[in-house]
Length: 304
Image 1 (tube, rainbow, N blue to C red):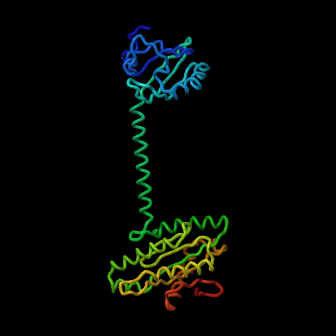
Image 2: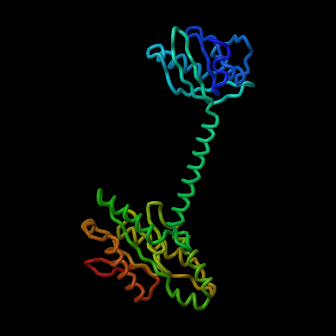
Image 3: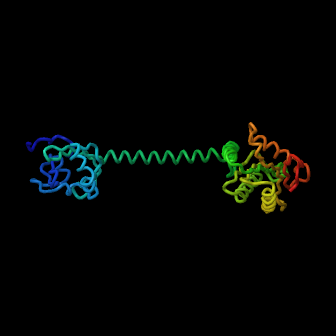
């Protein structure tokens, strides 16, 4: 083959001995890119990374001996100055000579990396937007839509292997008076402070959300009436540590209902449980407030 053959190709064209891996011939582009001098006295090990050489000897060579070629294999070149460069090689075998056509993939890998970074950034932004869309606009709690989604997941799990869920509706006592007396900024401050406290009191498996205005929803995972009593006692005590500008403690009324196994057949399980919890809440508000009442289908409203 004449020396000038392959001069105008913007890729590395190389011939090597299949047995010795001695480089027999390179095109001018390969000479310049690899920084080799004429006449070439080098082996393939001189121009590829150690890992690429091992891959060639153990995997590529047996394939080209069997099939006569191996296309689009990724290797790492060692360019002039010892720089490691990603590349793609096509190899064919003829009369114990391996013909290499090597294309530098630096720009391709750079573009690929940029695409990966763009994808990661897009995924991060999507996660952030999703998180924002699930949050209440004022407090750190879930909004109503997100809460329903999470509760439905719990209901589905309970349908497969039953465990009780307790629905608690919590309403701030005399919240209108707080706004009227101290202003809406103070009212918002109370909502945020209470929300943070609720998050501290629940478990990761529970759901807590701002249901609207001064009303909050808590769904306790695997919790019966006894669990509600223990939880609500602790919760009322914690909430009363929030002190209003006039020195009075903040209080709340809570209405609750426990999801029974046969109620999983309801067409709208959440709505059915909230209806019971809401009735219990109004019973608490009509009877001195600042306590928890649970709906019981046999005993009516039970004060805890």
